[in-house]
Image (cartoon, one colour):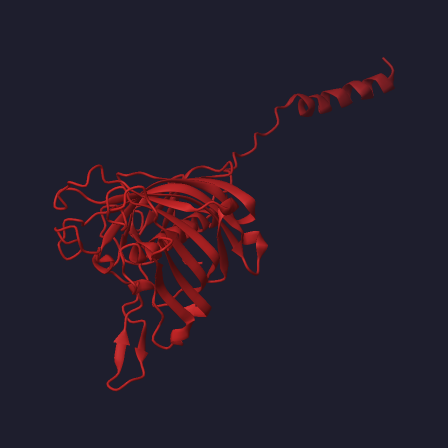
Length: 334
């Protein structure tokens, strides 16, 4: 055998084990954790603002011309707000804010919230009334730098859901269906723009409390002592035009308790003697919402109880977003 052939054979013997050896398996790398929280904050914020718009109308729709939570702070110029004004001829009420009016709930508002209540039932003039139907229309309405408009110019409707005018308030809670769609335009950052379209069932959970609703059914609801729940669903787009769907089950509805405050002291009036006033901001206190956004794993949003329904609900504006078993604390204030 020629030397060259011997060398080639020896080389093959040396290389062959390397060619036939199995490659070392790579370690399984866990995918990065899904920690996207902004869509949950956006959807919760938009839903809260919609409930606030309804609450402004809940006051005026009961004939109350001093909507407690939505009045001006004592330091503001009284001319910055036109409290609910009734147009009995056209069956409409308007509440208007001017020049960045800072309200008792800490929000800065501009523009007008209009409520129309012309119904086929002539007795259905108030929110509490059987067969009441209200139409909400916004005119140049802004909250904390967000321009909020009726989507495509369509009014938001509020339907009283009592099945009969002959009901017992001690046994039957009054409820309403809020059906509307809104466009949220951020005045300085268009990437934050949002769309909210949904149907929420709002229930006065303490209708049986005579200090909230008089058993005679003739007096206005005392919203300052009310506890209301919301269940239903909403769809739309959050920041950066990302689609979302939010579902709120009636078993764990979202709650607002208008007798609790995250900050008990809002400020001090410069009068003699000094007078302390409360900041009437009433966040979502409890409840769970399920959110699906884009192609991501569904989230569960816990309000007020830090992800544990056995804990006492906290009256704050924070909560927890649960994603694939991992809990992430969030602050819902934008």
